[in-house]
Length: 250
Image (tube, rainbow, N blue to C red; front, side, top):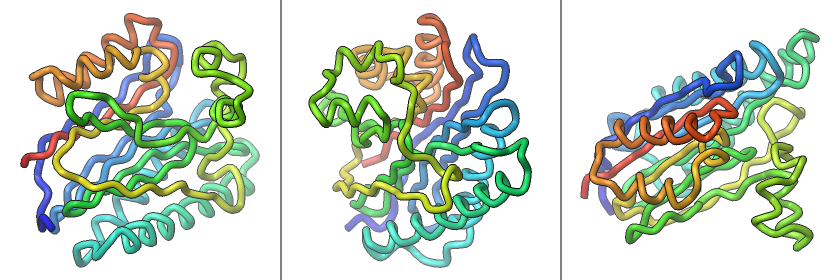
């Protein structure tokens, strides 16, 4: 097992061309043990509320990640840590919303991955996404927790119909909306593949072909992120955006 992960990454957020506030947040950190934490979050609940929820999530994750005193032992330890932190954050957002009517129904998505040695663990809540680039081909690692994804899974809707479905923005899970929050975990082997996390303002405005083309380019992660923002805004900029691109050093 590799004991230390190193790489180059860049993270960016953009308000887009339609929204008056930016409710998307991100977190990208490598700790002293070489463990990598990447997360994007898309807040919901209207002015100030969504922004608060998404930032509260990434701030809580960062604080807990900074306090780790050893490297993760295995994927079970990673999942346990993520679930414990998310459970606490979910309870705090939910309680704040109950105490203040102005913050009712606020919440946030979370697409998170941790790279530790040769382990890649993803944690999903909502419909932001995690992609990898393997052998120059784009692959979606996360599964959207959304109404249209449920319809697709139930074979009541195809991928093409999902793109224009009137309830395509409706999600079935979020942090802070309910007293309890479920997290969908997946485990993968990590061997240096490129990883991209993004909110729906990106993938709804940039085709998978363009995502793949940009990730395959020889540009830096910073340049790639900025190109994706430009593509999304050129195609309408219909929502806020947050992007992280991680490129490991073999």
